[in-house]
Length: 180
Image (cartoon, rainbow, N blue to C red; front, side):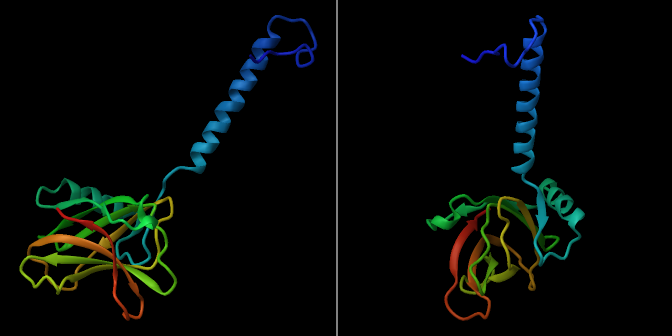
């Protein structure tokens, strides 16, 4: 058990141990707040985003509230590098836009990009629509990124995050998936 020694409290005043406990409690509280501030998850915006930083979270929230929006949580594959990735995606077909959110998404390998592909039931399965490209991950922070298809997506049934060579050579690796 911890006790306050006479060396710490040179006089025999009864309030001295209470002061020592107060100082110790204050120090522990400050240490806890410092640890929380260091590990706090803060939002950042993907560099490819076309929406202003302060509006992207608002856009995400608005899309979540719209009953016509679809989405879900990212489903992980067996890739061990992505076991800690969390997040979700929301898409609105009427608006032809969406927002995806990641936490713990590592940076892609050198000369690689993350790409989000939208699978539309009115298109051949081997012809998905590109929804976004990301050149960096989120680290431990929360990353929001815009999904904006170059072509009209009529009936999306799957969103897939892949890692691909920036030059387009080679086969993409499927990393995460959302099936609304």
